[in-house]
Amino acid sequence: MPHSAAAQTTDNPTSLCQTAASQDWFEDDWACEVKGDGLAIAAPSQTAILADTLDDSVEQFESFFGPTTTKVAVVGASPLPPEGKQLLEEAGYVVLPWISKAARQRLVRASVERQVMEQTAALPEAQRQALLERALSQLEQGEADDNQAPSPTELGSLAHEAGHLLLKAMIDGAKTLPTGQIRYGSSAPDWLDELAAVLNENAELTSSRYDSARERLAEGKSPLSYTLEEFLTMEHPSLKAAELVRARQGGGGNVAIALSGDEAKRFLEQSGGDPVQFYVQARLFADFMLDATGNQQVFREITQAYSSDGDLADWLEENHAAYGLPSDTDALAVRLDEWVAARLKQDL
Ligand SMILES: [Zn+2]
Image (cartoon, rainbow, N blue to C red):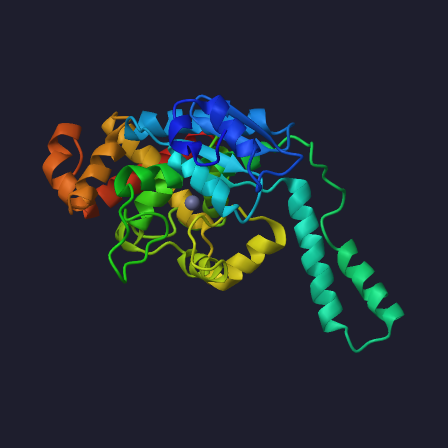
């Protein structure tokens, strides 16, 4: 099959995988698998669970935001091979990079080795090796192997990232942002962008969000780190770091923001803010609104309000009576506080 056949393979996932496998960027030890709206190109032992996770994540997204024609693919390489990304995008997929735990460990070890060797260039060889061994011994112990199944947390993070891309595809399509306007994911406000991602997470990540909220409560702090007004207008705490990563990667989008360990620590230092509390607040606000309105697709309506140049306050003014909500965001904030307090008490 000729390499330019992407358009013809749009409705034929098997031949899309065949086309992908015939191209130069497709590595020898990869497999390609399609499940419904999910596609995975990775180690053969991982493709089924990755493709399933993505198929589920499209379904989960649709349950909150309505039907989408966008499908999600993951490729076991970071950064993504540009030709592979293009082939999949032409076939209607948004594309995420995937790094297995084993591959991530190799990357971390390689970067530690590089750093130690750079910093110790002036020392005698035996001393350098001793320092290197000590640095490596401080890394996460135990070798992950490439065939190890992805953990629930990794799969939840993948679904989270899929949520970002699906929302962006839904509201922005091929549209680029006006010059000078920089947002974390899409042209939606950062809170809504993050909320779409958090709503796509699995049960493991969702309960970790509630654990974080309870921890803050136990420390005598409010589980909501920001006032509702701040939350609705703030920039994503990781925006600055994401921009740095983007710049380093040559300006291309599709940043893998599923980081862990050392990478995550560096990312947080660069961003100067802990995004975890932003995710927690997105989760709590989402669950509050779903519960208060009884409308599973309330954020679809709110997204539409933003798409037509409105905001949450406008949506609230127009729809509060139908849902029995207060008419402005200050009063909504009070209701949110009460709901959170009651909700966190429930499961204690
Ligand atoms: Zn996110």
